[in-house]
Image (cartoon, rainbow, N blue to C red; front, side):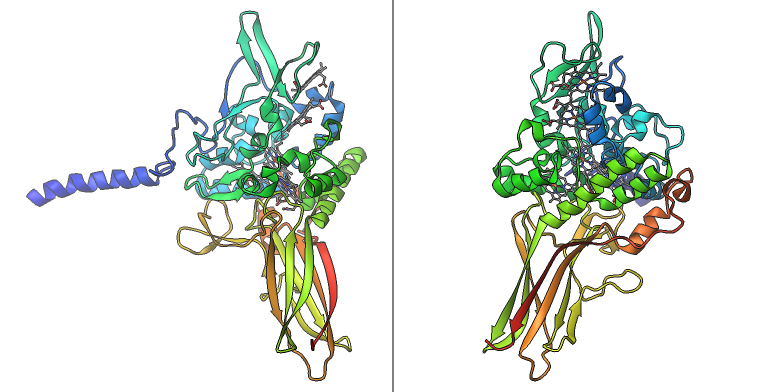
Length: 487
Ligand code: HEC
Ligand code: HEC
Ligand code: HEC
Ligand code: HEC
Ligand code: HEC
């Protein structure tokens, strides 16, 4: 009797403790203030007033150049992106609607605070929601809460949007930017406020640190990789490589010299040539040749950026005068953060090696693609493997709570790979070709994501895709070397 009296309340307390530990934001290390962060698991904040958000087409009327540069950018596509929509759809099915706020807080921030987005898909949404990371998102950012977040680091959209304020004279729309405003700035449409934040990497950090929605594990940590590296120390910011054309980016990376004011453009160009490939196809299909050409230009920029990011050195390792191994050094020469960065457990960057004897016979290969587009097992990849709580391999961002392997190359750093080569008798020289190859994802992963798009996205009608094509591979660097077997 007595035992039961004690046991039942104890059990009740235990269950309550369990529930509160495992429900969203219950960790004692990563404490969550849900009043401070009303859109949790997104950490965005909104200073609400009568001033509404403005779609990008309206900004375009007075800022046509900026609009053209931004159009077709990955920011413009952040919400429409079919790969994103496929993953979002899977996330909502697996975890429930609440997680979609986390995703959309970065992929369509205005859609979250206005509550307009109710489910995956694009149907019935206004321009400002569909246009992802648009003008009024960035130019309404008035501050950040990077040190108040559950991780006390920038994460999951920890910025504050203030599109305007109420004054005695009425509502005032305010846009924040890099300049001290001159007379007439914004004409009668908006007032201008000088914002030093827009000239710092912290304006990008809130969205370029993607943490697990509940455990706060850093799934993507581009900003911190940058901050802990040589470019941050020399004040070369995200903007100095990603808001300029390719020539200016290589100059920023090589000389640590900041671009001129006039060299900045709203391209936000990175490495995702696959998305540009899909989006320019969609623009062509819709009959918008101008947009298709604009996106094609961004596609070329992304490919050229990848082709400038790395270098390879091949050298022989001799033991007792005989070639024992081939050393391949892969250097990150121009990425301001790790190479690759961001979705390191999805992106694939790997070495393909072919060694031949004097007669041209292949004596060793590694990292070739088989007929199904799979990379051979012995390949050396530079990326990471995610794992869930059960220590098993996982890819989906709501499951991955740590990396079992995290093998990317730090900025201005390198990794060495050693290959054993079987030497046929009598061979004097061997020739070695090394290629550093890149693609957005494994073929099967891409097929799974594109296969999960919400019903209102018709891949055939919009993108002309009846099946997922073989993912294009970019060769970032190719080097060959002839090595003598005896030293
Ligand atoms: C903190 C901001 C942030 C949050 C939260 C976030 N993302 Fe992202 N997402 C990004 C950024 C930045 C990239 C681009 C990284 C890159 O290109 O490697 C990205 C890229 C992606 C991609 C790859 C798109 C492509 O075309 O290759 C997918 C898919 C994606 N996110 C899905 C999601 C889902 C689903 C969620 C919610 C579970 C989510 N994201 C939450 C910022 C965020
Ligand atoms: C991802 C954030 C982001 C987005 C989206 C964005 N901007 Fe900017 N914008 C910036 C940053 C950062 C700067 C400062 C860089 C610079 O010096 O040009 C800037 C600068 C500006 C400036 C002042 C610089 C000048 O040369 O006059 C204007 C005007 C501007 N943006 C308008 C726009 C418009 C219009 C759009 C949409 C078509 C837009 N921005 C989208 C981040 C953004
Ligand atoms: C009626 C015309 C008009 C419209 C519409 C307009 N702007 Fe402007 N804006 C201007 C003018 C004029 C300037 C000053 C010259 C310049 O920087 O281009 C300016 C300046 C800016 C600046 C620079 C502020 C600074 O201090 O650095 C930003 C940022 C900006 N606008 C963003 C926006 C955004 C975002 C939108 C859409 C929500 C928008 N503008 C819509 C006319 C307009
Ligand atoms: C409101 C959130 C947000 C802010 C602020 C933001 N980004 Fe992004 N950014 C994203 C998302 C989301 C994506 C990925 C969209 C996708 O792949 O579907 C992205 C993609 C990118 C890419 C393209 C990546 C690729 O794979 O090609 C670059 C480059 C980039 N951002 C640079 C910047 C820079 C530089 C800044 C600061 C000036 C910035 N971003 C600020 C959300 C943001
Ligand atoms: C010194 C130049 C440089 C600086 C500084 C730099 N980047 Fe990059 N970034 C690159 C290069 C080169 C690539 C292509 C190789 C790669 O994916 O790492 C890239 C790729 C990216 C991608 C695409 C990843 C993908 O999977 O497609 C994102 C997102 C990105 N950068 C964001 C940022 C942000 C945010 C900052 C600032 C915190 C920043 N970058 C600073 C050069 C730079």
